[in-house]
Structure formats: C-alpha cells, structure tokens
Length: 499
Image: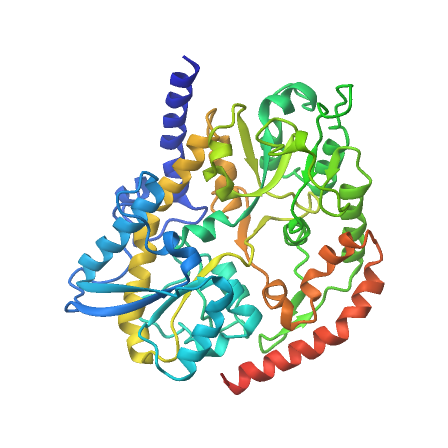
C-alpha cells in the first residue's frame, strides 16, 4: 500500500514539476505561444524547419568516460540514457545529417594530449568536441577552440543554456568557447546540493515538527550558512553503546565541499576590469570571516563526523551513512539520486541548495564542479562551418535535450526521492537557477577552473581546511605571487592566440 501511494504521489509531483521547469524563472519569451508555456515539445530554437545538411557526415569527438552522456544507450532500461540516444537520432533526422561519434579510446587523463596533438596539426576528423573541463582548463586549451560569438544559431540566453556558467569560462568576458546546458545531463547532475533525511529531521531537529521546515527556510530567504551550522550542531544524537548507533548532522566524506560553500556565499574571488579581464579580489574581510565560519562548521561542531580532514577512514558502521539513516544531511550532487543506494533508500529525503552567506544575499548560488562536461568546436574546423552548420547541430541537440531529456532526468530524481508536494520541485528549480520567484543561479568559477595555472589559489579554502587553519591572510599571501604570475601568463597566451 505504501508503495502504491508513493507512486501516485510521485506522478503528482511530476505533473506539478513540468510547468515549473518550463517557466524557468524568466519572463515569457515573445517567441513562445501560450501552448508552449504548458510544455516543452514545441519550443522553437530558431533553426528553420526546412534546414537541410544534405546527408553530410559530421565527426563528433567525445571523451570515453562521458560516453553515455553524449551518445546514450540504445534499448537502455534507464530512461535518461535511452532518451539521449533518441535525441541524437531525432536531430540527425531533422537536419538530415549523419553524426559520426568518435571516441577518445582513452581515459580522461589522455584526452588533452589527443586534442592538443590533432588540433595543432589540423588533422582532426571531427568538428564538434564533447569533453570534461578537467581536460581543457588545466591545460589552458582555450586557443584550440573557436568562439561562438558570431554563430548563426547558438543563443546562450535561451533556457537550455547556462549563461552564467558559460561566461565564467570566458577569459575576456566577451568571447565564449565552451558551452554548458541541457545538452549534457552531466552538467545538470554536477550541481552541488544538500540532501536531508526528512523523518529524522522532523523527529529530532524541526522547531515546527514538520519535515519540510528547511524548504520554508529556503523560500523565505533564511537558509544561511549560520543557520545550517546551528542546526547541525544540535544533530549529534547519542544512542549509547560504542557510538556506532549515534546520529550525526553530516559526515565529511569528500574534500570538495569548501568549493561549493565558497561559491554559494558569493565569494567569487575575482572581478573584471574595464576590458573584461579577470583581476583577483579574494583578499577581503568576508574571506577572513568565511574561513572562520567554515572552520567552525567543520571542526567546532559535535554534529560532524569528519572522515576527510581528520585522516580517519569511514567507520564500518557509517558506510553509506546518509542512505542508511545515520546522518541528517549530506553534501552531494544532484545526480547522486540516480545511484542505486539512493533509489533504494527507505526514508524520504529532500533536496536543498547550498546556503547563502546571510539573509541580505540576494540569490542562492549553485556551483557546478569542474568535472562537468562542455561542448566546443576545434580551430581545425572551418570557422564558417562552425558558425553555420555546427552551430545549428549544437543548438538543435541542446534544444532537443531541453524538450525530451531533461524532464526524464528530473523524473528519475523524483522517483528516487521526492514524493510529498511541489516543494522539492521548487528546490530543484532554485538549484538550477530557474525558479520564477526565488532569485538564484547555476554557475562555475574562473579561478577554480584555471586553478592549476593560477598558483592553486582556487584551492585556498580546501587547503586551509586540510591544514586545520583559520589563517586566511597568511595562506593568501603565500599564494598570491604565483597566482598573479600565472594569470599574467594565461592572459598573454590568450591574447597571443598561440596553441
């Protein structure tokens, strides 16, 4: 009976989610009819109906480790990957083009060398590239790819693109070469989030005796880092015995959490000068305060089980701690709900954005890690073809993903987790920067993406936590000289256009 009720509630949530996803937190596009605001199927991407590539073959390179996110799987029981496969077929038929998918045939560590070698010798058999940021930005491969400013069809203001994230990777805040959006489910899935166990929260932590209390904090603009710290400090519930039955606020089990907090509280770390070039601005009172607050959250908090910075392994009793109901919260990514242990979790759980710095902060900010995937076009491809044929193919793939792939992805998340009302759906919209009332954005970070070239300044808070240090100023002063030199070298390479 419980299973049947759960399925019915899931279906109800999906129905309520669809209009939320369509609204996307933006004013109605004058190009969309009233019927188009009720579903994605008829969204117009601006590509003419009779567009015809005359059955030409276009090579599409992809890094092997993201194969299913690019080419999908035929006859796959997982609806998301089967929809990606169907998307490719549908676009190929629509544009009368054959997409020849070419694998890197290597793991992600070898992709950069392949691209560098084949593009520099103008010997590529492909005109479109799908790969992860980790193969591009650490190697400063920006000059190996065309910018899309003059493309005839790519419009990054459309709902299927993440404009903030795209422009974060622009060196000069004008030319953009790397695209992010619904074209790759990996980008949706790599957004940072915080999961929470609803029944545990209601039983032990809620001041209103309701499981949805954190949702209301978010909607009221009160979901802040200070509030989250206060809640988790109360969340160590001792059960007696050897402690293996205790409950904790959260477990630190991966080391990337500081990056998500830094972005969520609006500590971007740089600004743009009059010419659009990046200038470091991280040294600030806010950065000092944030270091102290992050230290307090991690180390001055009885509600935290630290299995990262302490050097201690995860105790056997706390394997899969969140899905086994041993912690109240988990720092995660949206795509975690596709994992089997989340699908099979007995307790209902909710999804939250990372908290703001304070209530005065205007928007929630969700960070997309540099393990996410981008699409770009190599300079070995003819620029006229990039602006015309390739831009049509990419925009068609992106818009078709928006129409037919993204919703199944959200539905998969709902089937794993969210079965009460539309509040969870609203949280997803906030995380994705697509809520119609709560201001939010999904973005990346220039300094973090080019961290290896910038003296590891993008890892400063990560490093401070490993050192169990609150001395931001000292750490910053030790990093800024190599960071400044690294930025100078990066900008010179960019302006020279050298590959």
